[in-house]
Amino acid sequence: MRKRIAALSAAILAAIILPAAVLAHWPVENRSSYVSQGYWSGHRAYDLASPLGTEIAPVRSGNVVFAGWRSNCGGRQVWVSHGNGLYTAYYHLSSIQVVKGQWVTDSVTHIGRVGASGCATGPHLHVEVWRGYPWASGSYRVNPWTYIDSGTWLPYRYR
Image 1 (tube, one colour):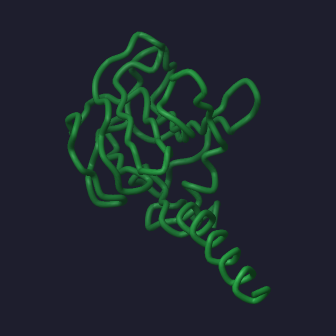
Image 2 (cartoon, helix red, strand yellow; image 1 turned 135 degrees about the vertical axis):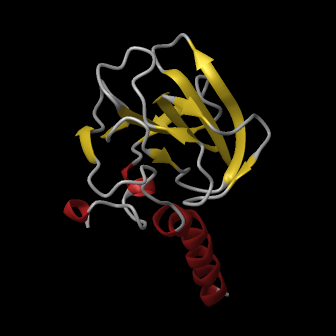
């Protein structure tokens, strides 16, 4: 019985940790992009600087739940649901290439392009990871690094 509980615990832990560590990717399709602002208590996201118009792909596959303009200083933005209450949000886009309800595939589907819309001072992607629907009561942001620290486009300086 003890071995079964240990095996079940290991399987549950793997199901929670591995998707974040293995199935997530750097969203900006440019190896010269870089972190211009990291995650801290006053900025619960990562800002990834890259030239205007650089393609953006979702960090994981999922369903687009919002694609459009918001007056929350994020400008053009896309929110993707990945299941199990996990969402990613992409802000300051120069253009949006998806629609609400569309299925997007990690590192394949282009959801938009790097921009400086909203209150941005220069071209970059502001990426957030949420537990719960973004900006809904009870939802909260988590550090995105474990979701973006791998993939084809991850700059060599972060490998």
